[in-house]
Structure formats: structure tokens, C-alpha cells
Length: 195
Image (cartoon, rainbow, N blue to C red; front, side, top):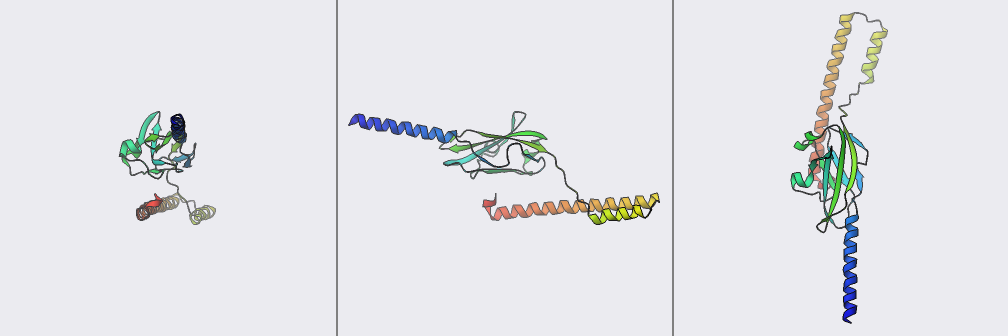
């Protein structure tokens, strides 16, 4: 009877250790971004993994040239609780990133132990602001060239005028992008599950 209880206890202990080791062998699975993806150097860096059963938090580390540039726990003292992490361009650490490859490492904290690491490599590159020149402006230039506008001072005035319009358009686009970012931040503050 005692041998049977000892045997059952030993089997239970082995199963417990085996199950715990299996849970720690699981790597968090990426939702976004995907391995090899290029992202905007100057924009926010956003990450999401699928939930790992039993995980109480997620560690996100970002490395360039084998040097840790940012880690959510090291730099803020917090883990991601829901598997989502964003490094916004307003974060002071954002300026430490450079164009090129970034290795992202994600681990799940399960019962006080870290899971295996999921590693992906991203490419940071400056995309810059895109400028769309309306067809109306393009057609107007073509019409003037076709009409034989050869006076260089008149052409220079037209070029200066178009340059001014382009700068105004870029400024309006920048203002709209800033306003959109503010609206998104406000919505996220109202609905925390959008983070």
C-alpha cells in the first residue's frame, strides 16, 4: 500500500515536472510584425503575440548589433500583460534606434519561469513622408508647357508658386497626421483593449 502511494506520488511528480517543462518550451507566437518585415524607423514599433496559456506577462527585448537597445521590463519595470507592446516615437528610447536590422526577442512568464524565446528580425528604414501631387497641378504644368510658356521669369514664378503650394500641402498633411495620432491616443485611453 505504501509502495503504491509512493509510486503514485513519484508518477505525479514526474508528470508535474514534465508538464511544467513543456509549458516553458513554448515560444510565444507572433501576430505582428512578421519575421523579415521592414518597418518605419521613425514610426511607432508595435508588437503582438498570441496568448500563451498560463502566462502572467511578456518580455519584449529589442537588439541592434548584438546590443540590447530596449527591453520593457528593464526600462520600465513592467511586463506586457496582454502580449501587446508598443514603443512609441514619443518614448525617449526611440531615438536610440538606427536604420538596419533589429532582433526582437519575446518570452512569456509562466509560473515564475521564462518560456523559450521567440526571435524575429526586422529591418528599420526611414520611409519619410509621402507627398501626393494632385493631378490638377500636374495637368496645369503640362498645359503651360504645351502652350509654349518660354518666359523664364514667368516659369520661375510658377515654380515658386507650386513649391509654396507643395510646402503648404506637406504642412497640412503633417498637421492632419499629428491630429490623427492625438485622436488615436484619445480613443486608446477610452478603450484600453485597443492598446
